[in-house]
Structure formats: C-alpha cells, structure tokens
Length: 331
Ligand code: PBG
View 1: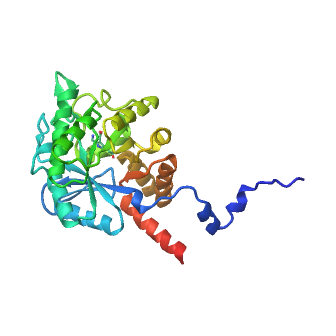
View 2: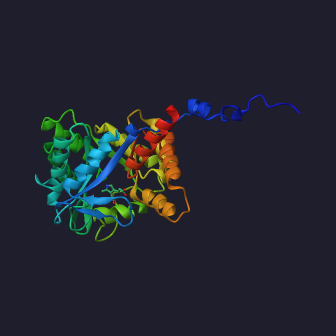
View 3: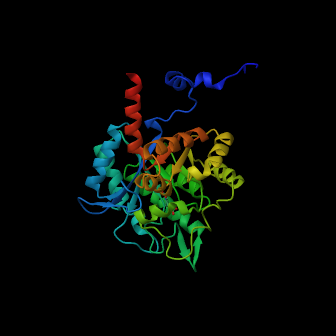
C-alpha cells in the first residue's frame, strides 16, 4: 500500500507543535466587556437569563471594571438603565444620565480602561424603540438628530469611543459631523453596521428593560436572511466615517463576519450577544455541555471567521482561562 505523502496528523501529534501551527489566536486584547449601569448604591441586580451578569450601580460597576482592567481587558461597553422613560428618551442625552455618570466614574477611577458607550434610545424611550415614533412608525431623520446628541453627551462625559446601535440610516455620518464640530475629531466611531433583527437579543432586553412596547425592530434592523445587504450596510458606514464596523449577533452570522472581513480592511468587531451567552450558560448548568471549552471554542471561531474584536459577556471568564492556559504552557 502506498504511503500518503501528506499526513496532516504529523502536525497534530504534539501539543507544542499544535500550538506552533495554530492559525487563530484568541487573546485578552480582543475582548470587550459589556456592563449595565443602574441608578442607586450597592445595587447588584442579577439578570435571570444571563447567570453571572448583573445590573450594577456605579460603585459596583467600578469594581467589575477594575477587575476587567486588571486582567488586561482593554475596553468596556457601557449600557444604561434609566430611572424613568419618556417618548423622546431624554435620559439618553441628559448630562447626569446614568451612562454619562458611569463613563465619568470609570474614566476618573481607571483612566487606562477604554470606555465605549452604546448610543441608542431604546432603553430610554417609553415605547422601547431605538428612534422617535410618530403615528406608530419609527421616524428616521428626527431620530438621527437625537442620536447625534446622545453621542455628543457621551463624549462630554469622557467616553473614548461611541458605538451607535440603533440602525437608523445616516446616523454614522451625522454623529461624525456633530463630534467634529464639537472638536472631537479624534474620537473613533464603532458602528453596529450589520445588526440583525434577532431573537438572540432576548436576555439583553430583560437586562436593559428595552423590549419594544408595540411591534418589533424589523423596520430598522436587518433581515436574518440577508448577507449581500450586510455588505451594503457596512459600506455605507465606512463611507460615513466609521472607524470600526460590527456584525451582530456573532455565532449564527459567522458567514457575514467572514464576508465583511474579505470586503473591507477596517477593524471588525463581532457582538456575541446575550442569547449566545445564555445558550452556553444554560447547557453548561444542565451538565449538557462543557461550558468553559464551548466558550473558548465559540470565541475562537468568531476570531477565525475574521473578527478582530469580540464583545462578550464571557470576557472576564475567558480572560481568566486564557491567563491560566498561558501560564500552563510556559511551564
Ligand atoms: C440596543 C442594543 C441591543 C443590543 C445591544 N444594543 C438590543 C436590541 O437591539 O434589541 C443587544 C445585545 C445583546 O443581546 O447582547 N439597541
């Protein structure tokens, strides 16, 4: 019998060799940790469908942020849960809004940790939509004006990067213009460019209390069946001045991540959303999956598809495991 000339197993035999020829690296520098800020003191309000994730008052949020920074996680993504909601989402752009306070507190206490703020209205509006509503419809251009105001108020509170997640047309350009006029010409925009109308956001809506009170988000978020459209969406945001583009969710959309990677040279983020986290956590708790290994495999797969940055509720757990692995392989 002829021997096969190429035997892929030759390079799989030893752990050292496997490590040398590994194509994809997952490092702590790729991770971004989302945090939910609420008013009050000493508040740690667990999100039932996301074990390990809580809504935190600023004192508690600072502890988590410090912990993340000490593990080498470079950035947090801040979400706010306001005291009260109204049709125009006023707390989203209030000077003493919860995210504005959180951004200020983090930058004062942990200046080396990057603060990215989610720019949207849905947590702050009484109707729960990401824009302004008129006659039961979401108005694009009026919403864009407000979103630019939200982004500016985040900058004035010390945010390092703004991340618009609303999916209104033209918002990246409007935010760029507003920031530039105010002198924030060096502030990067991380745009949620290809954001799908996904059921995987379910647990987040519990965390952020942002479920739409009527209808759904399908008139502004993308149809899960579309991929060519994602390229058009990313292209628009790039033309409007986005510095980092994003695909969201991550795991069910790895093909979209790979396509965007191929088409554009910009840094690419992927948001591994609340439902992805909840699935692995739930199966882990039932003993049906090995939670730690599935987490690292999923994160590595998102990197392999082409994402430079991964927004994940697993950031701290992953950082801890990666550190342990690094230590073990240096022995
Ligand atoms: C706000 C926003 C959402 C998420 C991030 N920003 C919810 C939504 O669009 O309904 C989802 C994040 C997650 O599920 O982890 N627009």
